[in-house]
Length: 319
Image (cartoon, rainbow, N blue to C red; front, side, top):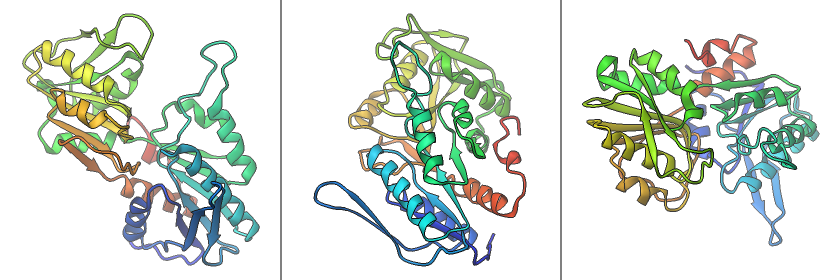
């Protein structure tokens, strides 16, 4: 797909230049010139290298580590585009940081996801496009159109191509809060569903898990949205091995891979770890990692939005 419209511009900030280049290459949409840097005191500077006057601008930036630097880069870039008379300013945030702080779970806690939404809207964006946001209700924090794309169909296609489908495979939620995502993948593959659960509600203490379901002699697929420290997946993989699973596969929408995660995952009984390219992490990765690109999905969404066509076919869970 080569799309040519001189009024459509794509910019990439510093979080994930490679993904932006893939989107530009697959669509033909011009990747605009922008310079970002930090002064000695930590202040962030953004310089647009070309005119955006009367253009529809799309800014790609995952708010991954360093989260606050990437968020401020994005806010400053939005302001630059608005002051340079862009027609519309749309942000593409493949990984939306702070989305886990979506409610007041205990007294006096902030709802930081709402604060971030307010800042982006106040800065002047017209629309936001995200990929597998941690809490889908965060869409409602925006008083502008907010589209959230799902990665389950990407994972489903990958596993179908490997012959991992039907009754010989069990899709497993590594924690009870992930049951909806696991059920969606199970429906795509026509496979049964299981859950790894834990006693108590403390997510930081997950060593003694137990299985709800049967995986004996089966190939299993663990699915979650974010892979951060690897603790949840490692513990769940051990539970599945003890329950008699023949193979354990892991897939996650966003691979943050914090320090120590690669070593932890390498020790776990996991055959393959599958993540999208939504995040560019400089930390060590597990030996058995494989990346699926979300570029085609995001490209399609950007073109649909620009042309005023429905985006819903792309993010429907039941597609």
